[in-house]
Image (tube, rainbow, N blue to C red):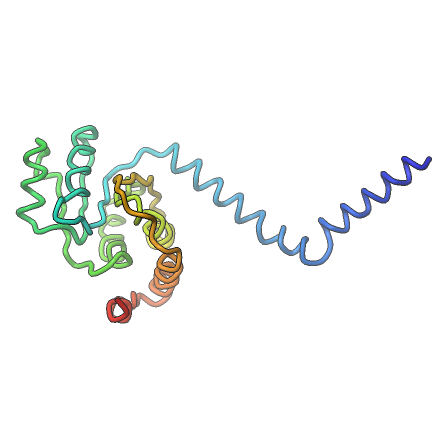
Length: 202
């Protein structure tokens, strides 16, 4: 009898914890979010990317371009968009040396930062019917790129698979991801990127 009484009290306590007050409200909010994130993860693993999107920002060693050139050789049927990358002739030389057909390259120089890396190209990708891409950037930069990509690419129904370029640098401060995520949300609702203000803060 005593054991049954303890079990009933434990059950009531558990129900109270799960289904009342702040815990219940948290579950109502968190469960759909977790399900959505799980769905996105599964979908990104199943869908085969149709293109490669590379974020510019290499050092003089051209690590992102060289990594992508090697990646492109292993994926010979994918077009390659490079946004805000190294100078045109320099980039073309890297890919030519790797034996990559220059007709696969789409070089864009409108972007001035990571947010505009996405916003300047997303409509072009959508118009071409591209629904999935490999997203290439340096490992220390990938967290911020993914936050922005989820918002900007996601607003057009485009999913991505992150492919990190190895480096010896530590990950960026999370504040950069939060800041640029907020900018991406503003862009999604207003079309304004806040690039000028962000540039002035650097």
